[in-house]
Image 1 (spheres, rainbow, N blue to C red):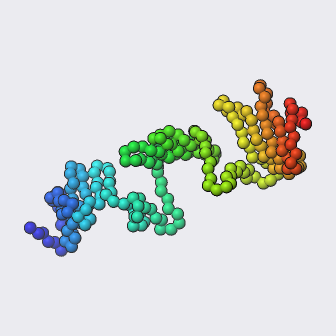
Image 2: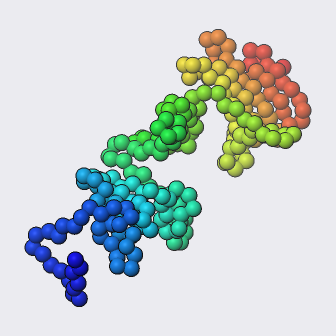
Image 3: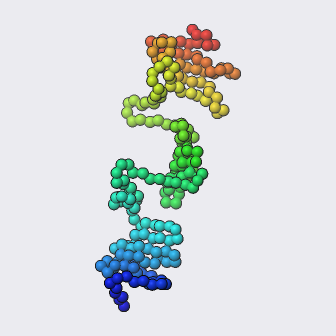
Length: 231
């Protein structure tokens, strides 16, 4: 039957109800009988809206049946909108663990972005193969080949030293052996011998030090050095 109360109902034990269903939740509203809470199964409850499952809570997990919006009605699976300023999302692992953002095709791992405890940001592809590492000193290390491609007539790769233009400022392209020893270097210098800018080429003879072998100066002159004696 129906129990009506104008105040509240208090019990010293528990209040039990039927399991209900998604179309007729056991805890519902007189004006909206297909919206409310019901028991899905053992240790699992469901919240229904309009006769459809919206949220399942089982053990410590919560599963949304539709899109999730934070601060906004969602237009995608997860939609976050800040009430002011920029929106922020945070992933926090246990102490010493870091945090990972993973990408899947159904149950197949595709790629992930891992922030490790040493403050490196690691981009991994092919499941969990490191492709790019960004360290806390803003250095980028690619594990494979790097391809730069631009649509149009001109492609640009720029190296910039952000310090002010004074003697000694430079931008370098260095070539290394697998043992991290520099074998050659191309250097663009801001000022060399008080003559504008120059492009300097350095090589390393067997058993020797890295030495300048050729210079292109701002006036179009080319200097080729033999045993670093000039010429």
